[in-house]
Picture 1 (cartoon, rainbow, N blue to C red):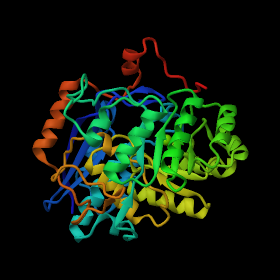
Picture 2: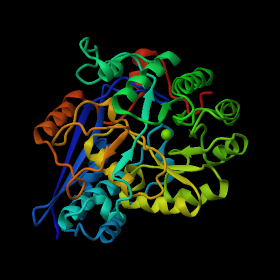
Picture 3: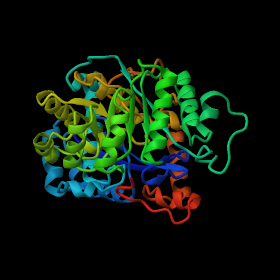
Length: 428
Ligand SMILES: [Mg+2]
């Protein structure tokens, strides 16, 4: 079997004004959809965070990918590795989201080839990853401080007729009461059984008050996580981390770097998790040497694919670390890929992160994938089990062309609300 066509389609999906350590989400979140087509008529799909730079890299890979056998990932990976040198850990950058590009290329090819292989053999991708250990994959409620508004076409207003979660999604949430109300609406709609608050937005006392309010509202049996995206110093992390002992399931990237995380981990009786200080295979020896975290959050877009995430899981099992999963904004192709990974990973003992409830558009046939009792059911059918809705993909592509965004940058949006606002790697 040979890959004969490759299609790269950047899209933009409406995104609410969510606050985070790097500023404020723009009204649209960018993604890039990749399709590989084989000489026997099979199609493999993948979705990556995307940007003009990633799209250019994907375009450059065309000469390597076309003619390759989608069933021999090792051979394709070697060829890609000869053309595209891995980026070092500094390329990740200091923002909450990973700014590396080559890993996204590897991820796109890995996922699309697995989708093709699943269709060729008539089995789900999770089967190809070693077998299905759970048919329903749990996700957590991902809370954000936010300004009023819904993003996308509704960027400058709200739908006055919205009810339920649709109304809560466009409401402002800036204090503990707002966060609890957001959590209650999200849990009511999707049945999530664990909660994560995206932090690094307000000063620690305000965020800790919100976490304690969530604990009071939901009781001791609902796990709660907090992620200040490394904006706190070691001293601040220790001081406020102690306040959160007994409140949190895990404390995600309170501070920056493996040594900083290790210093906090020695002083605070909470499991520490990361998608910022240990983000690549090259950083795993440092993780062991420093003892920087208890849980590594995989993300197949940034670890180089689903098979690489399974390798990470094996490392975590060997070194007695937990595995959980990080998320950026995404559509259904990525949700399907994440769900196959969650279905196949034996030691994925935490609910996965997902931004999915914050979006309302979709590019796959059948529309939005349901989240019930906090879980996404493994899609039916071979491969990823999702197909492109061509008119919806075209609409999302037209949104991309119209919105004028070429990469994620949350600082300009924030400056519209707070003139002169600047990102700081350590704020408190
Ligand atoms: Mg994180």
